[in-house]
Amino acid sequence: MSDIIDECRKLNQMLKDSEEYRKYVQARKNLRANKDLYKSLKELKRINADIHNYSGDNRFDDLSKMLIDYDDLLHNSVVSDFLRAESRLSGLIREMYSVTARDIFFEVVNEDD
View (tube, rainbow, N blue to C red):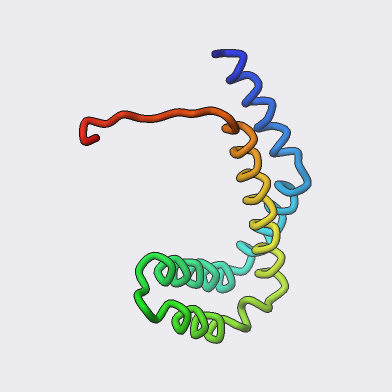
């Protein structure tokens, strides 16, 4: 098992050395330098999550309204650079998980099952 953990540490370092991660860190730094932008983006992400998790029949209308309300924020270059970098890093991490777990079948048995 220690060999697997050692390889995971190497993979972790490779991820931190990747262009995707470096761009994400820089974009996050740029975003956080402007507290108002950062606060507004956090609010937008909260609203987006609420719509996706809790909206009923009006999800499309709610999303449309959100996009209109936050149009200026979404077109801000600092925000759009961050969202693009976040998306690319997230995609890389999802692909890493997918490759790592490919062909591994694992089932957790609970008392409730």
